[in-house]
Length: 386
Image (cartoon, rainbow, N blue to C red; front, side, top):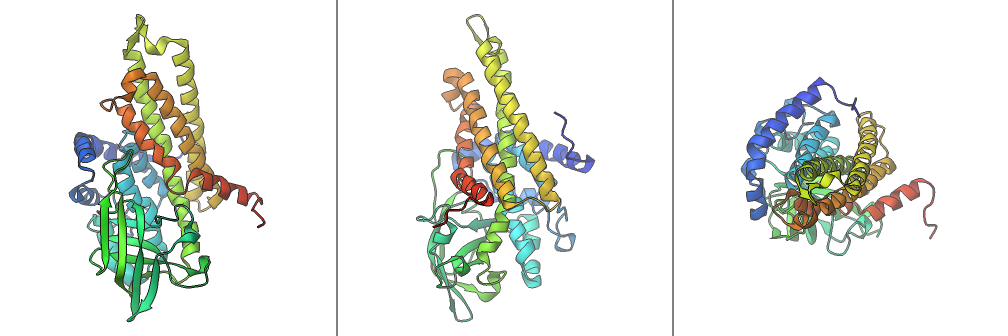
């Protein structure tokens, strides 16, 4: 179906970014997957070309493109090509972490950080998950206690995207002792903070080029000027901030499914079995017809969610619906596509195997899909009374 969401300026960015991906990222991506990390120079190159910090105002050296449709274009082009780890690196910068800075930073913080965010000299991350908490933000234990005019942080984080590359980590901490969400605050931890160390680059099922790491805070000294927003306001900030994050995940999931389907269509037209192309068998036609329909239905919904977000109208519950439905559809489509490759689908030399491994995390990060159902249900007035 024809999409009516994007204008000429969005499509111009799409074409430019597609050329860049084909020329500079696709040829090097396998090397990065083996190395387990995207080189910093690749992220700086993104900034130099104007693809990072899209919403950073021009007065801080950014493009000043606050329209989230520009973010979506970049996300779609990378995800469609099966570059999941690379897409996650820059969507963490553009879609997930940057909105917190734009909303909550003081003028001094904006001047200190935004120019580097736009150029790629400062890579962003956000540290929520802890070894014992997962999606339960109210269970966070990492503390930030007032000390010598600043904060002393103690605790640990895990599963942190851009964990090794990040220069600024928006860290979710407890600053109070009430035992509820009013204790939660956001503090920006900088790369050279004493007492802040990084653990290993975690070995994952997929998205191997993404540097997902553990972070440790042992008496880490952070100046008071690095508090983001107000002390105790973190839970509310996170609730709002998770809307663009979950929308971004949904956008990438649909694009990933579409790319896998396109590559599978090429494969089943070329691969022969029993003297004819695999795609000509009724089962293949029916399964691929189902996949095409799934992609188009999910695309229509995510486009509507994107339009609502651009208008400032996308709710927490609607973002959860988009994330839940589109990532589940992604899983179903890619699983079917792998099956249609037969034994070759299980071989890592075929892109569908990487698509399959990379996609599995979509139903987990950004809040598990079980949590998405909970968010949606509560929005329907079905909260547990206990």
